[in-house]
Image (cartoon, rainbow, N blue to C red; front, side, top):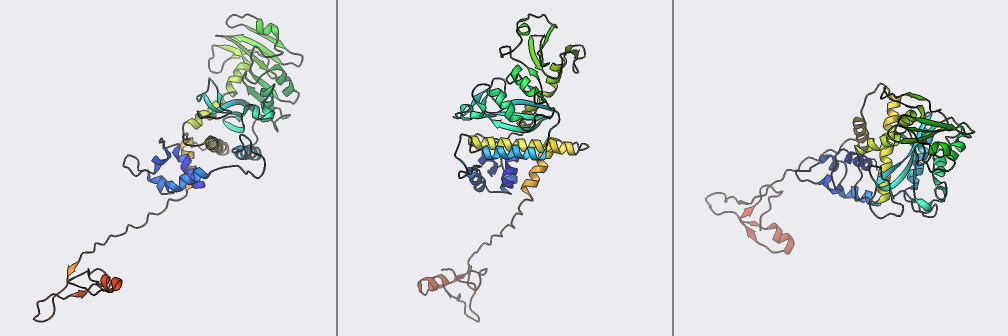
Length: 391
């Protein structure tokens, strides 16, 4: 399995359309690094037999084929790493255009069709992931399902003083109040049609550069600021004070929007890093493709954790991937010594001794041992043991 993972990761660096192409002997392919570690038939057999579900444990569900791997990933991240104060929540897409009951469509993503993942991230490290399955999951469906999703992602991280950055798909005044009671702060954009939004802020007409701010009884700040268009935002941590942008010193914007832009791109950054070395192929089933995506998240997480533990090391992600692939594959198999092909050519039997000029005749070994027929031949093989005659 280590070799299978190593070869799959290496397919993200050397990209071909089909899995069979990596084992072709044609001079336009001829990638010996794959056939040295595993034969094509064995690799395809392992991929075909790959599964993560123990059907004896519990009844089958829509994502039961992949849930053990997702639970392993989430539990392992909780075990080995606790994030810093700033966290972000966003959705990610795994490309899938085939028939699938919970396939989704998101306009702004690189892959518009596919399997939607809710991700909790910190500086490019995926802390926790959830697969969206619609009404099949009672915990994450029904009314206020976005609030339920946020609470499930933050399970174990509440009452710790974290700052959560989310876009307008998740944010609402009621969710911000609920998280504030659990010592968790929220900052992000807000949709104008959410319930409990301040009417004065939503309906206020602004000119470019103007801003309107209103606070709730719990001290939650709701603001609308206009630059090129109206931007409605909410925060339980910042007060919407105007400040110079760190990237454009001549432009001022509310501080909560600056912090949102600073910490919100973690999920997109994670997707961008994985897109450079994508090793997913069309021939894989949906849960195998999703499993390979999770393996790549694990590899990217390990790189970020390695960089945190080795701050002076400037190894790039490509070099790190190659070093991990080498460890997974191990040393290559030694090529067997080429067999020397001996060409057996019959020769004429030598002449008899003395004055006789006749060529000696020998008994044909094949005829005598096989059919018990005595035949004589004037030819023999000098390279074979006992120099048997040719029939």
